[in-house]
Amino acid sequence: MSIIREINKLRRKKNAIILAHYYQIPEIQDIADFVGDSLDLSRKSANTNADIIVFAGVNFMAETAKILSPGKKVLIPDPEAGCSLADSCPAGEFRKFRNKYPDNIVVSYVNASAEIKALSDICCTSTNALRIIESIPRQQKIIFAPDRNLGDYLNRLTGRDMVLWDGSCHVHEEFSLERIMLIKNENPEAKLISHPECQKPLLIASDFVGSTSSLLNYVSEDSCKKYIVATESGILHQMKKNNPDKHFIPAPPLDSTCGCNDCKYMKLHTLDKIYTSLSDEKFEVLVDPSVVEKAVIPIRRMLELSFQPDLRHFLTWPST
Ligand code: 13P
Ligand code: SF4
Image 1 (cartoon, rainbow, N blue to C red):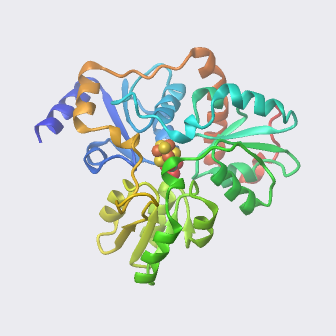
Image 2: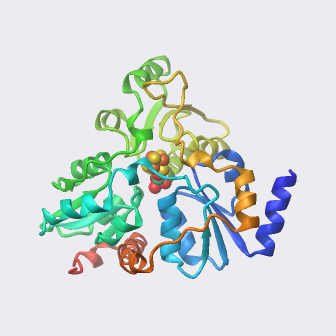
Image 3: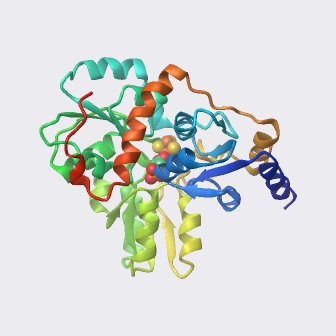
């Protein structure tokens, strides 16, 4: 309790907010000023009046916050909180790949470095990806990066043939459909729900596919009482909190005796590190201003498009 009291004192004194992703440990989710998916967190970062943002998420999310609020101090409690998906798309190699397709625009999933965003025409998250892709005229060729599973899923949903960067997330690729099917046999009434970063056979076998916030909304609105959840296990905290009468079974990975799957990067943050981050104002997230200048354009385009009620207004793609 005393660490929470100290964190509260510091955040008031310094006019700081703590933003947390749904994959954080429950203790962090419970003390955060705001918990959300990557889209909600980017919106919150763009609109806050706080002087300091403590970002309990991974680096690409904290970088997005800095890009949207360059005048604010953005802190990450553990600077090692990277992302295997973002790492699977190095900027130098991606630039060469992009140059092979001069007629294609680039849609990048926000799970990518600031440099990749700076090489993109528009960003998306898993919450708004379908909306963003559908807003682009059908004849416009697209490169989608960095997640091949989400890209392939979007190709199937939209009937497009986007060129895909061959990247993936270690957490979502590791789920074992075989082990999940054993659980399903023992719990035939349970629905399987998955994040679109999972592999194609798992997505095809799923009753519902969606971003972290979409999965949360789905289980709250659906009448089923039991779910097998194929995404990072941190999300179970909010699912249980919002639906105490329902039962959630984490989907297991292949090579582990453990029943659930954690993102080792998301799980680096602790309450102690949040306290130190606030008290010593470390670790500051900095993005080269020349990268910010370019990367802010596709992020802002995404935010504009995400909250327009009528997509038809956007069917004229801006030339880049
Ligand atoms: P969401 O955008 O669905 O929150 O997902 C972020 C993420 O890192 C998934 O692995
Ligand atoms: Fe990155 Fe995967 Fe962790 Fe999400 S779960 S932050 S995509 S490594």
